Figure (tube, rainbow, N blue to C red):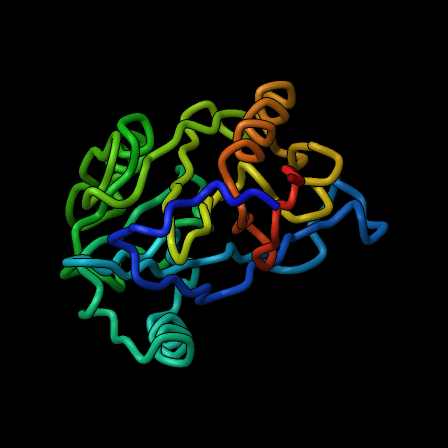
Length: 216
């Protein structure tokens, strides 16, 4: 299979910190009408030359977030210099305040929405284009109109941290948005866009998976 990533990259490693789950999952026979469990999102750390970035910090309790970060990377919250939030839904920024020493980043509309909540002790900064000359901020609307994913190269593979642009692998297979998606057609188009970019997809509420769509 033809890889989409470049071998030369400033990203040196990436790790999934929490594997997310949905509050309700139609592929498990559950209704969209009512949640049956607490949902958390997938959270990822990207480490590269001069930066350590955590994406969508998912756990609201500081001790749990700290424990999972240590268990998966050996890092402490103060070791992270940046946080990126894919969209404004609470489960993707519940753990933001645990990283008080880091810069908080999001796409313009997402940053504005988070800052308007008046629930955060410092502002979320606007991030566009390319972060640290290594990570691309990619518009992926549908789940929300302002949703943005991240894309980067590592070890010759192109990785997309999709947030809720891709809920789980099951939703990906059917190109279906999650029940609270604001525009299902846009959601499908964003998944098709991600398919053209990624060798590996990290969905918002599932483990990562390979996207082997370009046979030689």
